[in-house]
Image (cartoon, rainbow, N blue to C red; front, side):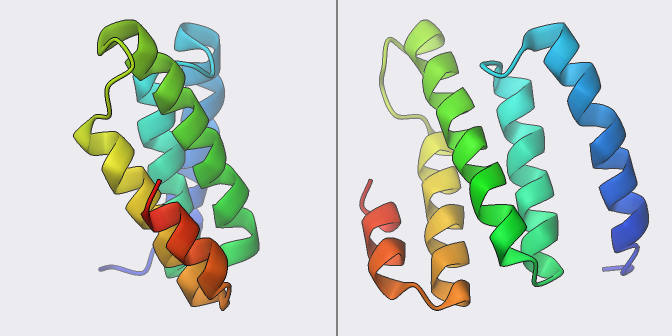
Length: 103
C-alpha cells in the first residue's frame, strides 16, 4: 500500500458524482465505488464516515440485484455485508457487527 489516502479520496470524490449522473444511486457501479471508498475510510480509521457510506452501497446493490438477479443475493452483497460487519467490529459495536454479518 502506498499510503496515498488523500489522493485516493479525491479520486473517489470525483468519481461518485459522475456515477450518480450516469447510473444513479441504484447502479451496481455506484455501489462498488461507494464500497471501495468506505474501505478507504476504514483503512484511514474513519469508521464514522465509512459506515453510512457502506450502508448506502448495500442499499444501491440491493436495488440493482432486484433488477438483475431477481432479488437473489450476489457475491458482492455478501462481501459488502462482511465489510460492514468488520467496520462495526473495528468501531467497537460488536452487536451491530454480528447483525450485519448474518444479513
